[in-house]
Amino acid sequence: MSRRRKGRDVNGILVIDKPQGVTSNGILQQVKRLYGAAKAGHTGALDPLATGVLPLCFGEATKFSQMMLDSDKAYITTAKLGIRTETGDSEGAVVEEKPVPALTEAQVEAVLENFRGDIQQVPSMYSALKHQGKPLYEYAREGIVIDRPARPVTIYELKLLAVREQELDLAVTCTKGTYIRSLVEDIGEALGCGAHVSALRRTLASGYTLANARDVKDLEAMRERGESLDGLLLPPESALTMFPEHRLAGPALVSILNGQPVRIPGQSLEGFVRIYGDRSFVGLAEAMPEGDDTNLVPRRLVKNNGRYPRRCLAGL
Image (cartoon, rainbow, N blue to C red):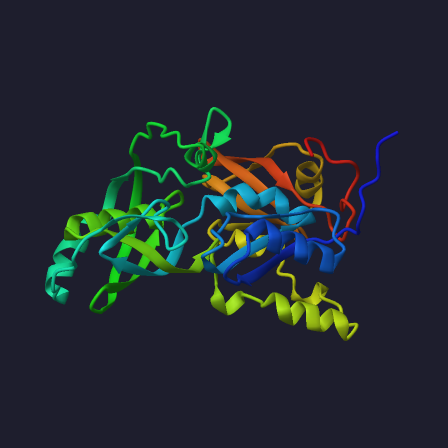
C-alpha cells in the first residue's frame, strides 16, 4: 500500500521576493507550510546574500520546473572594488586587497564591453555546480580546489548604472548558468583591482519580474487574518508563454489526454507547444513536422483541479 502524501493538492506558481539572509530552500519550506501543500519546489536557488525574484512551483506546476530553470535571468548587482574574497561575495573571507584607481565611466565601459555577448566563464568554487555528485562549495569548504573548465554563457545586457569611488552598480541580463559572482570577479580583475559582489538582486526569472513577486511577511499576515492564499497563485502555463498556443477539441483532445500523438493536417509547427482544450490548459506537447502536417506528441500533461480531465493518462 502506497504511503499517502501529507498536505493538500495545491497547483500553481507563486513568485516570492526573497529577503536577504535566508536560503531559497528555507523560503520554500516556509511558504509550503503556509499553504499546507503536499508538493512544492523552487526553480533556481539564490544565495542567502541575494534578494529578489524566486518562483515557487506547487503541485502540477513542478512538471515545468526544469524549463523554468533553463530560462534567462536578470540582476542588479553592486561590485565592491579593491577587495577579493574567498567566495566572491561579501560573506567570504578577504583574500586580497588592492588600491582602486580613479575610474571614469568611459574606462569602465571599455572593460565591460569585453564581457558582453558570448563569453567563457569559469564557475566559482563556491557554487552549487556538482562534481562527482557533490556540490563544489562542499569541496571548497574542505579546502579542495576542483579543476573547472570554462563554460559558454551569454550576457545579453551589461549596463553600467553608477560609478562610485570603490563601487560599481551593474544591470545584467544573461542565460542560465551565469554566475554573477564570477562575472564581477572577472570584471574586477580586468580593472586591475579585483572585486566582489556586495549586493545582488534578481529582477527576472522564468519570465517573472519583481512586479509579480510577493513578500513572505504579507503571506503570513494574510494567514493570521484567516484569508486564503490560493488566489495569489499563478497558473502553471504562465511560465510557458515563450511557447505558441494550440487548441484541440473532440477526438484529437481525447487522444492527447490519453498520451497519444495527434496529427494536425495542413499546419507546420515545430518545438514545444502549449495545448488547450475547450476551456483550460492541458499541457505541453512537442510539435514535429511531417511533410505539410505536424505530429503533436504530449510531453507534460496536467491535472485539472486535482483530477485528470479524461480517463487515465499515459506517461504521467
